[in-house]
Length: 454
Image (cartoon, rainbow, N blue to C red; front, side):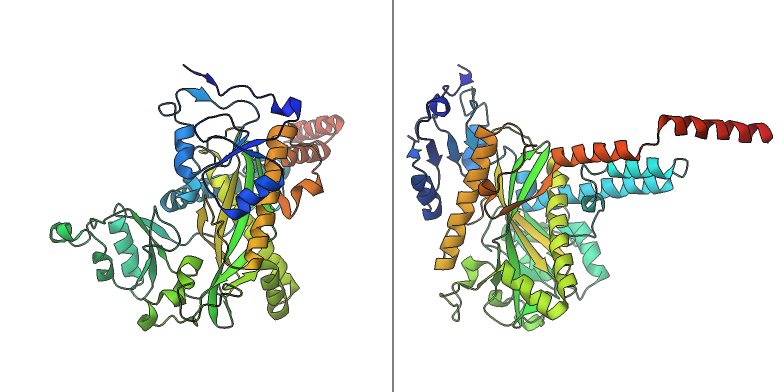
């Protein structure tokens, strides 16, 4: 029988919140217990917040597996139903590619439309983005050229042969923590990852029968180095709503360093301790430092860049990274199922090249909550605390997302995109820029008089 999952009176009665979790991670459970929340029976559906695995979220929103039950008002879940549109590597690349293509086409049409006034052209341009200002501009490519294997194998071969000396990186679409990743500088290196029993039937240029779906992306071979070592950044992004979109960036992200000195030499192409920054890989290196875990605070990186490249360069990089995040979210805004019960804490992995250009490598739906150092433990405890504060405040306490933000609720998060607020601001600017009615009529009379003279 269909119906809601049992109406709860805990909000009105001020009773302790009941939580469910598929993860017994310390940083999660410690926050739940500190808040005085009670752990619910996993066999029952009466919960206030559910920190679920991506697998169980699919079951929760699937009518065939949830018995036709719906989430009641006040229940909160940590994933959107089809979060994978951004967090599965092949879908992320495809959605962002489509978004760029659509935006570029719209901008070209606006640029060609010379039959409208400057005010109308600017108004049309702002319609491409809900936010006036910095997010109106489509940034340069922020995802390396990417192909899905085996489907796009022939397209990849064509692109590879244009630059036969380039390096590519192959990743399985359904795995994490660096598992199954390898670098490619020659086409025959892909064949060892194909299904051995079908190799003989594969012809030149045709799709290789891979054991599992992969993506292959152009490798960024000129990364910014610190101390001669490659690193990438893990940035935490919280989305509480997609329509209208509201997104927060956590100021406590960190860099993840390789243990060994970086080299683009072909002889080091198989050395995972040179090329792959995943902590799950680097912690097995002989020289891995357990005290700092190969991690560095984002604030320290920005100070390093400010000292070596200047304050303007540091500030531009920060703005560029926010653009990458917001436009990546907007790329999936039209396809994400926006459920009012859901929020998402993403782990954005971004690499910076020598020109300080940010490149989005992937987006994680369940960024690791394991801790490797004391600083790491404290960071993730604060992170989860702030995520819970914002999510529960917006989903259960405040129904007005345009209300002024409570800084105590935000913690170390900062709101980087609020579509509702931006839309209100855009409407205000449009009213201020609109010419008075009398002036519009005078413009019309001048046009008529000019016609009479001709």
